[in-house]
Image 1 (cartoon, rainbow, N blue to C red):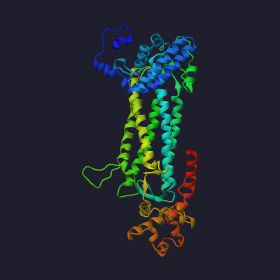
Image 2 (cartoon, rainbow, N blue to C red):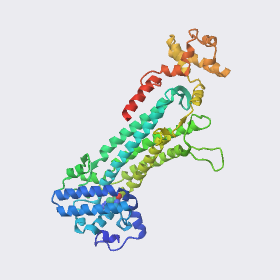
Image 3 (cartoon, helix red, strand yellow):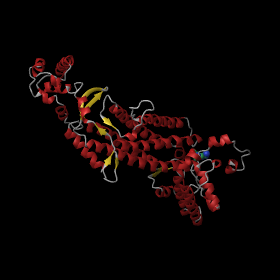
Image 4 (tube, rainbow, N blue to C red):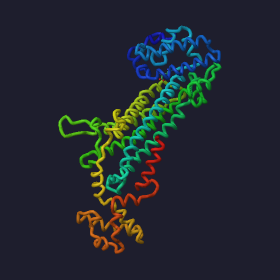
Length: 470
Ligand code: ARG
C-alpha cells in the first residue's frame, strides 16, 4: 500500500480514487531514461565524495542496467501504488540490489529529482525539434528554389495587392521557422541547468559536488538557489511559449495552403495522402492535415495558458501542483514534433529510395497563380511609381492611377489593356514603356531592394538559406 511507501506515520490507506488522482506514473514513466541517467550521475558523485561506498555505486549501476533492460523489454511492472516514475524505479532498484538501492536517495529529494528529470527529458526533445525545424526549412527552400519565377498575387487584407514571387512567399515562412529554431536554442540554455542538490528545498547536509553531477549530465550550469531550484518551471513555460509561436506559424501556413487549394484559387495541390474524402459528396478532397494543424495550434496555446496559470499562485518552494506540468508539456512536444514532421513531408515530399529524388510534395499550378495575379490591378502601384519617375509627386500619382483603375474597372479590362492614348489622357508623360512597368515581371524586377521580391533578391536569399541549411 501507499502508506508503506512513506512511513509508519500513516494510519490508513488511500482510497483507489485518491490513488488514481494523485498518481502520475502512467504519464511520467516516459521520463524513465532521464530518471535513471540522473540517478546514476548522483550515485557516481555520492561515491566519489565517499558519501556512499564504491560497491554501493557498482550495485546501483548493475541494478539500473537490469531495470533499463526490463523497461525496454516491456516487462517492468509499473505500479500505481508507487505513485510516480521515481518511486517505481527506486523500489525496483532496492528489490534488486538491497541496501545500496536504499542509499541512492541520500542528499536528494523527489523535488530536485523531478525537476532534473523534466529538464533532461526536455533537452533531448528540444534537440529533436531543432532537427525537425531544419527539415521543414529545407523542404520550403527546395520548393522555393523551383518557383522563383512563378508569380502569384500578394495580398493585404486578403485583397490583391502586388504580385510576388511564389519563392518569396515560401521564404517568408523560412524566416519564421528560422526564428523558431533560434528561440528553441535559447530556451535550451535555461533548460540545461541542474537543480539536483537543492534536495527538498533548503539544500542538504551532505558534501555534494553539484558541479560534478552537472558535468556528468552535460548540463551548462547549476541552479544557484535551492528554493528556486525545486520550484522553477519557467523553462517549461518558455518552451511551451516557443512551441506555441511555432504552431502559430504552422497555422498561418495551413490557412494559406487551405485557401490556395480551394477550387476558387487552384494555386496548389497537396498529395492525396494528406487529404480525406467526404462521406456524402463524392467530389471532395479535403485538406484535413492543414486544418488539423490549425486546430492543434489552439491546443498548444491552451497548454501555455495551463502552465502559466499553474504557477501563478504557488508559494515557494515545491508544491504538488507542479505534477500538473507534465501532461501539457508532453502533449506540446508530441503535437509539435508530429506537426513539423508531417509538414516537412507534405510540402517537400519524401525521398523515393529507388531514384533518390523527393516525390509527393505540393504541386504548384503556376498558370492559375499568374492568372490571379493579372486580376485585381496588382500593378497599379507600379503605374504610380512610373509617374513619380516622370516627375509627379507620389500623392498626385496615386490619385491619377486611381482614376485609371476606375476607368479600367468600368470597361472590365486590366490596366495593360487600356490603349496608350487613353492612359496618356490621364498624364501626357506616359509613353509606350509603361507596359513594361505594368507587366508582372516588370513589377517584380523593380522591387530590387534587400528583402524585396525581385528574382535577383529572392535568389540571393535562397543561396543564403541553402548555405545555412546545408
Ligand atoms: N511526481 C511528482 C511530480 O511530478 C514528483 C515530486 C513529488 N514530490 C513530493 N514531495 N510529493 O512533481
